[in-house]
Length: 113
Length: 106
Image 1 (tube, each protein chain N blue to C red):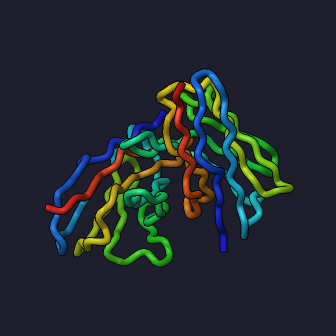
Image 2 (cartoon, rainbow over the protein chains, first blue to last red):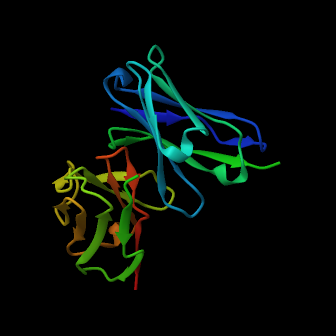
Image 3 (cartoon, rainbow over the protein chains, first blue to last red):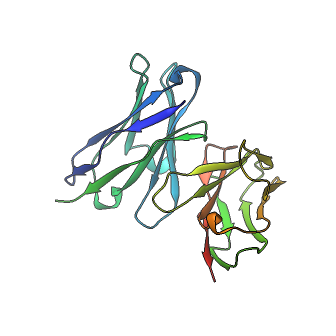
């Protein structure tokens, strides 16, 4: 069974960074893209970017190019997303997803001083 | 960027209704469109891939259609368990979600 287990909720201060993780079991992440999607409170889904864990290649939505950094560790079958220069409107649930079929449970990031 | 304009924003429906929602792409995306269902507090769930292919286990009351710029998700014989927000996603030019259609009970 494929499962994506995301790290726990984060509380970050404005101007700081947080790094979220997404550990995959039941599937080798080298064989797929890992996507990240966010959802602001009461709002819709927004695609952030994706990484090819086999070679580290990434693509980002334009608005997230200076906000998110995607990485992956194939030895631990885990994808990561770092969010930098946090602002209040970065407060959201962040999902990792594979092939559209498999999604993590989401990580709530709250930005507050 | 490819914009996906989803309509309507919300619909008030009754059990047994036939429900139709739409997504319009700002440029030709072929059939590179998926539809997702998201219930409150849950992660999205894939319903339709490649515009018209129902994913394994999805009830056959869900039907996707369209190509190019115009796409439709139809739910025939709406069930209470189908109350959710539905999103389209294009993946022809990077990836873009529509804003969602929320189904609510009358």
